[in-house]
Every structure is written in C-alpha cells, then in structure tokens.
Picture (cartoon, rainbow, N blue to C red):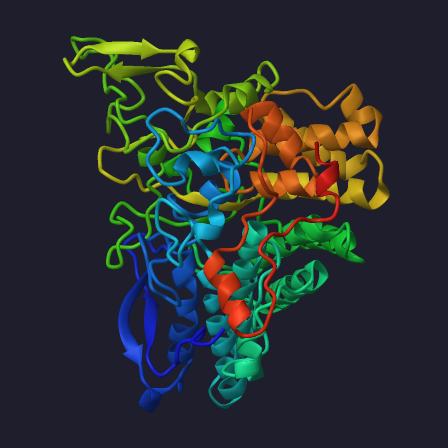
Length: 547
C-alpha cells in the first residue's frame, strides 16, 4: 500500500457549530508540524477529521480521490445494502448509465473495472483502506502525545472515538468486499513491508479487529455529546450488531451482544417512540421528532445543510426516491395536492420498494403506510396521469418510499437519517438469545419483538413463527426488513441469515452474481506488483447453501 497514508503535517481541523446545537463539523483551519497537538482543543480537532468519511457532503479527498461518505445517497449504505437487497426492485425504467441498473439487480460482474473514485455511477470504496491507515496514524499520535497534554479521561475518550470511527470504516468495507487489507498498529504506519502486504486477512482476524475497536470505544467514549456526535451508547450498539453478524464463527460474541443490550437498557435513555398510535412508526422519522426517545444515533441535519463542505450535512433522500415526472397536483386545475407538492419530481427514481416485498407485509401493518403504491405523473402538456401497479416496469420501476416525507418547501429537507434505533436493539436482542440457545426466545427477548410489532398495530408472533427455531428466525428476518426499511442494513441482515440469494430471487426477481463486490482490478494488480496475491472475490462459508 505505498502512498496509502497521508502525512499528518497538514490536517484539516473541525469544530462544532450549528444554529440548532447539532453536531455540524465545519472546516476552519490547519494543524502544522510547528503547532502539532498541544492542547485539548488541538487533539479534539485532530480526531474530528476522522468524521469526514461519515459526513453527508457530495465528496471529499480525505485519503483517496473523489470519495463519498458511507451515509451519502448516491454511493453509501443505502445503495450498498438496500438497493442490492430484496426490498428494492431493479431500477429499469429511466435508469441512468453506468452500473445503476446492474447493482440494483445485485449484478456485481462489472465491479472489477471500477476505478478508485467512489462517485457515481460506479461505487468503488476500496480506496477507503487508506482512511483506516490514516485513522491508525491519528490514533498513534493521541496515544503517544496525549499523556503529556490530556487528562486520562480525555485521552481515553478521544482514543475511543477514533477507534469507533475506524471500526465503522472496517465494518462497512468488510460488508461491501469481505475482509480487506488494513493497518491497525500505529507502529506499522509508514512501514513499507506492512504497506505492501496487500492480502486479505481471514474473516476471524477482520472480525476481531472490528470487535476490539468497538469494545474499547464502548468502554471509554463519552456517554453524552452534542446531537449527532458519536457516543459510548452508539459504540455499544455497533458492537452488538457486529457480534450478531459474526457470532456464528467467533466464540462468545452472542454473549457479548446480550451484554450490550443489558448495558443500553441500564441507561434508561431509550424506549420505542409511540406518539400517534398506529402512526407512531411513521411519525418518528419526521423533523419534529428528531432525536426522540428511540434514537441512539442519527445523522443530524439542519435547514441550512446542503451537503456542501461549507454548509454541512444533508440527507437528500427525496431527490433519490421520487420519480422525476412526479406531479405536484393530481388534477389539471391544480387544486388537489400530491405528497410531492412541496418539491415536485426528484432527480430520478434511484431507489424504490419492490411490490413483491410490499405484498409480504401482514395486513394492518402500519409500517406499510410509508410506501406509496401509486403516483400522478405530470405529462409534457401539464396534464396528469395516474400510475399504478399495472405500470410497474413500464412507467416506473417500483413503489415509492415515503418514510422520509417532504415537510417544508426547500431544496433539501432537514431530515435526520437514523443510524441506531431502540427498535433495532430489541430485535437484535431477541436474535442474540435465539442464536445462543438455538431455540425460540421467551420472556424479555420475545417481549421486545412483541412491542415492536404492537407499535405497528400487529399482534404477537404466532403459528410457525413461535413453533420452531427456524420458523422464528424466518419471521425475525422479515420483521427486520419491515422495521428497518431503507436504513442501510438489509443486505448485511440477509447474509447473516444466509438468505441473500434466496430472498433476492424471491422478491427482486434476479439472482445475485456474487455475495460481495469483487475487488477492483487496480488493487489486485497493485498487490501483484508487490509479489502478493489479493484474492479478487470473497464469499462466506455457507454461501453455496443460500438458494
């Protein structure tokens, strides 16, 4: 990995400022070798640069060329883990060039040709291994110089924050590509032999790297922070989720997941959002309910955010889920507003909801109400035409996600993007208990699932879902799909349950070409130049049984 790290002589520094007291990093200056971290503020600014790959800005050159962050709409988690999954129909009608359609079909055959940039239309994230090295370098500086300038508590807080961010970077990379080469020891940063060791670690090794970062973070990070800045609670959630993903091959991981549930519950900070009766599920995502009782962490936005480097994070979901020809009014007289009256059409119907997946919801499930099954198209002459399910694959590709609705009349809605919710914790806890005991959970674990379903207006699970372990796990997988629709989890969940290929064929109507993205050719060629073998394709044990 020659030239994989960037010198710390000049580092962008960040501060916290926002009219809403949200976490809103702003670039304001530089750290030079002459004023290398010497104060608490210096060290904080230094670590804050690690948030850049997680900000919702149109692009950055943090450690690679033309990169987009993990939460950004064109190339981030929604495209990697939702559009490739069973919840979305392939984008066939009006799809842009490049690999927009192919990736939505779970067709990853073209991934080896992707270049270093992660910008549209070909999402290549491998360059972000550079970010891990840079985080490791920053970690080394805090560990080496911190004791001379920071209290013990602050040093641990800052170290934990960097390790959480590094763990998240490794987590996402592993779930896009499988295990990737990383440098996690500060003493190896700048070591040519280590940089040229471009080989995949084993799944167990990569899982342990992530676990160790998350575990340190959850023990040492600050418990409270300004809205949107990561906390020890978010680290506990990340560790819990990771332990569920890897517990089948890592000893003690299910016990650790249960421990994290108990720790989060003990804070008494979180509960299901229930305001609005059966509308509570939809209400929790509205702007009036930002950081409600259910939110452990979210990408925080404000009305001033436009995803630029100067004005901060935004979550421009409406531009990616609303068809470009969506009408503001249903009638020619323009007296009957549609759900899109505040904006009109989006940039394109990049992301949709599969009609077949929609059909799998139980009757009366209030969570289905965030999906629109018809819309009015505005024609060239200004008239409107109603498009329905009969027009799927002709006039539009799939149903419209309205989980993050238009609420104010401006270009970008100040809608937060949920990163961790208590409902997810309850479902993860039930899964952890079930996987540990290999049986249908009872007591508190099942009570959590029941509470999530009750919020959606549904009765407790019954029939096959409580008769056998297999029946419960099948029901839980679908429950997670309904509850966490378009929150950047689905493909990861499907792989954990070994149902990625099965469910994509069933609900999307295509067959995945691979379990993970193949690595880009440039990385494989670079490894060869160092005399290393970087395996281009990766699959987990059990992939062949996923049918």
